[in-house]
Amino acid sequence: MAGQPLGLVVPGQVEATMIPALASLPESLWASTDPHGAIHVVDGRSRLWPGAVGVAEDRGAVGVLVLDPAAETGPLDDRGTIPVVIAQPWASNPIVDEVGPWRSEFARADLITVVAVLRPADPGELRDAAADAARLIARLTGRTPTLEVSVEHPTAISLAGTVRDAVVRVGIVMSDVGATGSRIRLHSAELEHILEIPQGESAAASSASRIAPEGQFTLPSVYESYVRASLRRLVRAVLYNEVPGDLIEFASVASVAGRGES
Image (cartoon, rainbow, N blue to C red; front, top):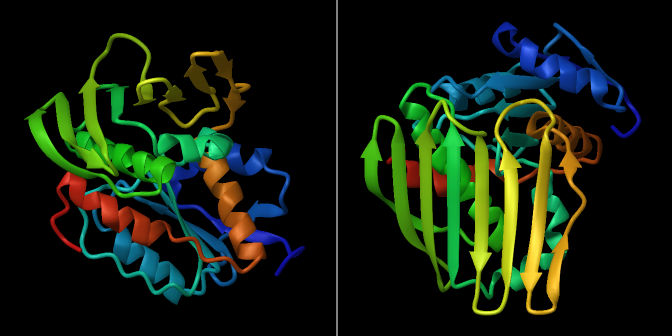
């Protein structure tokens, strides 16, 4: 399918989010109403989004983008026949790919912390953000963290657990004050990595730093929204017949946020 233009079917409730990303991509994409042979966008904020993925495939979709998926859903039906990409603010941020050369060092971490701030919203979004944080850790370390909720409040959630041999601590709060986004630290006795990832659908600076006894090195800031990066990744998967493991990966971390189903 490489070289062929693709249609993009976007539901009305997420048009404002998707159109800027669509307009800025160099790939041959256009907004379409014909479901057959097109990429479909699914609004993941609905707890019924797994069913919508199946409906899109039945209607002839060649790929599905799940935007901002709710963690508490029904069972996931991963048929594995078309590419499905999960778009989450932190785990899908392109800075995660930029730190690839450091991943072998992440295994040396003995403490991993994620501290995040969201704007006040439905308390259920704290669970969704917890799943995002868990998937971010999984993408960085190559292992799914084992986490349990230690404190839960309508405006805050804390989780604790392990991944590999590292202790993991996650704290997420809703607040009107300060910048939103997440800060993840992977710390060992002589080495620390810090990622700063913004919240929101617009392009904003993401950064990554490596701090060692010989000094600090910071990667160039990345200015690309997680929405655009996820759509770009999905287009590549469709054109080159790749099937990402996003649904399997999401299912493995969603239970951390209280899905309670496999």
